[in-house]
Image (cartoon, rainbow, N blue to C red):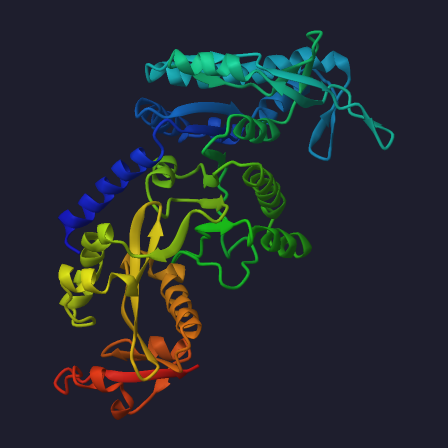
Length: 443
């Protein structure tokens, strides 16, 4: 792919995602260490650009570090139990001051980008109370979120900022978890995305146990986990922690699991140490972090006539390298019902076809996967899908003809077979000059 085409595809991806997420709501939870980092203003600039593109944005800043600092300065002790800070009532004014200090820092950064933000008291809470004999003091639980007030802020094109403070019905403040707050907001507002901007965390084979069949980037990072894969990932890493980051990773994964089960479309865990992590995650198929999703991210479906142009563009590089035979729009139209495509966020990234013959044999043909997506396991998924389809059509065997991919098909269970076992109609089209090898699976 030439340089101009690569740039064009990147720009097309941005426009495609803008269309896909039009009027969407995005919740950003920003770790307080990220807020104090050199990359913070770059992230704020990116969030502002996203807001300018018409997406609704909410920011929930963490404040644990600032709260620690202020309580230490005032010689006030505290303990952490099950993720909750336990203090007496005398600490609450200082906790509230620290939380609003951080929220104001975020608002100041937004103002520097000429964006208006509002810090609000939109969260009603109650005291966590006493559990197993432990009095959780000033720690609170979320009771209600004032959705109508937030929508009014959106209508004025402002960005809401949520400090980690909730108020009881009588006006008493409580310290609430910013992570739980961001998750609750994403559920209550039917958010399309919840993004956890972390301090240097990337889920990878360097800090986690990665179960089999989960695709990795060349660097070993996990692109995505669906709701079927995520519980197993949590289980194996909780049982065998391999790094100091595992407790935080598991916390974020559990929150993501709960959010997606409650209807949030996607949750993203991003490394806030990377400049540009946010737009790369939102406006590209792979992104820069790990996406948690249900089962609507990518999938196999039948090709339609509207897909023909995209499929032709997809197979073109493979034709130019003599991996695939040329096909025309007419060819695809005439055999449209034979083709399947793999669609990722409304964009076709792979295709294949299953042709049936009178003698009961079936041919898998035109297997093409966008080179940028080849390490996601899409090719094997499509081949296995077509093998199952051939079984449902009572085929007695499935074969492929290939010049350069024999080793790959052998890893999927195909074995070499004599050319004279081809169906008569297909044998007539076989070219000795091209010399394609025949591989077959008996069903």
